[in-house]
Image 1 (cartoon, helix red, strand yellow):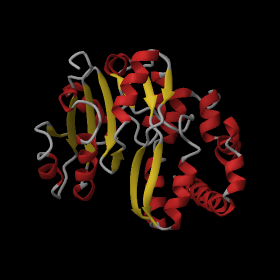
Image 2 (cartoon, rainbow, N blue to C red):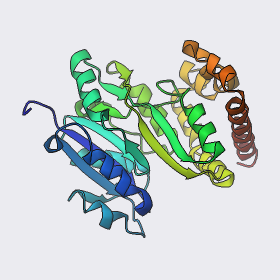
Image 3 (tube, rainbow, N blue to C red):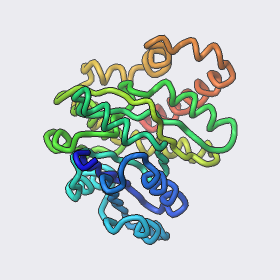
Length: 275
């Protein structure tokens, strides 16, 4: 077992006392040797008990900001692992995630992997969100989460000038230095109870740097055209790779997805008008 690589799990936090324990518990429950897992928590000036809870799991608890990109890059600079797994504090790993990632990378020489994401929480709308998210795994509107550290450093990590589309930007750059794939074991994103106002506000926050991202790669760029194009975001992503039949098998969820997509589109358009 000594020849297994060390994996550094970097968790970014800000006022996540209600979630951080579940996240770190799931790392401790991985069916991968715990002495081969390094937990690094990078907090951004939390005003609750986030850091105190995190220190029960690891002595590598830091304070850094101002945004998630900078926190992740800082965490990697502290990391000793050969591989990096980065998480948000409201995410929970299924037990096989790290082991499956290591096996897949070692056997197939992948530089990074996607992890299927499931939305969990109360009520109908979280079921809609889970249904919607299932179409995005390993597409151009997803991002890898498990990365070889040397490749992370080679591309310069996350672009700290971007907040929101930094994931898309990182994803496309990591693919320039090697192959990627997706594992089967999921992670769970705890959305708790769905609040439409909070959901739209969160979407609005993450779209604020879209123009910077578009300018960086150019409007004519093929991936930009997909990520921001009406056809792909409302139809293409749901039908590629034979996934479209799911829409017809779950018509109520499908209506819910398109209702949310419509509201997000309206919110984005309004934000452009008043910019």
